[in-house]
Image (cartoon, rainbow, N blue to C red; front, side):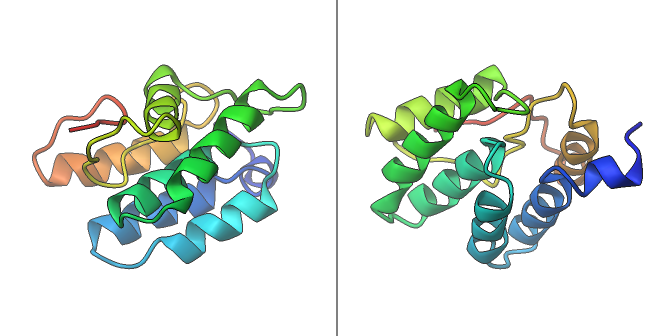
Length: 136
């Protein structure tokens, strides 16, 4: 388990808040944009924001996906994307994603178990089984 100080130095709280807000049908863009700006060494908020922008048909989804991929490859990246999140970012960046379902758990399982677990609990309450980001 992470110490409280570590949690607030990573986008965990933002990602959990965005996942819960999405499941409740609330706006997530402001929460995610704040995470993108606050945590430049973390690509996860960029991927989650690109998914939300893509769902809304916003043209900046591709730019945000590209930013996520750049952050993921950067030397100072503190947490690499999981394969599912990277796949989603690559599809959206290439303009090949046809649609997305929900604010998927676009956080790596390693190192950010709290955010992943929170989303998994919300998904399970809907009877869904998710192992990562999904593209329809």
